[in-house]
Image (tube, rainbow, N blue to C red; front, side, top):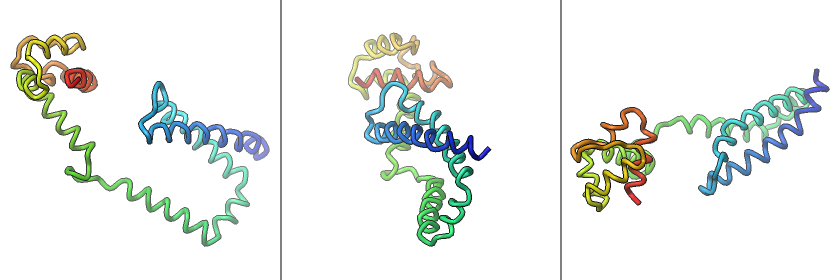
Amino acid sequence: MSLSLHKWATPLVAGAFLLMAATGILMFFHLDSGLNKEAHEWLGWAFVIGAAFHIISNLPAFKKKMTKPLSLKIVSVFALLLLLSFIPLEEGEGNGKMLARASMDKLMSAPVSVVADVVGKPTEQLIAELNAQGVSITTDSQSIKDVVGSDMELGFKGLQTSLK
């Protein structure tokens, strides 16, 4: 079994690393398009499986390497970073994404007449634009959230269009 794992492990890790590195860099610089994000998320499993195969097929060497102080320090740093990544960020200046999401939620909950004032468009024009995006507003007192319900993706799409 080790021979068959060894046969697959290195090429699988190399190919998956290439994909993960390229899509990760594109996402970091907000240059991703098409299915880059989905490929990164779903095909990342190939990297995990390949790494597991690689470790299993090279277990004696891996165990020996992991007894070295430098190896332990490097792995410990990444383990600590992983733990730190679970700390929730508080809402405020340091967390733009949470602040932006909260702002969008408030805007989607406001009557469409208020949203029109905020985006600087006549209410009728905004209603027409939202209707064209599938957000069926019938009165200026309705909110986007009233119409889309739990389909927040549609709401964000409609709101994003209105901000252009």
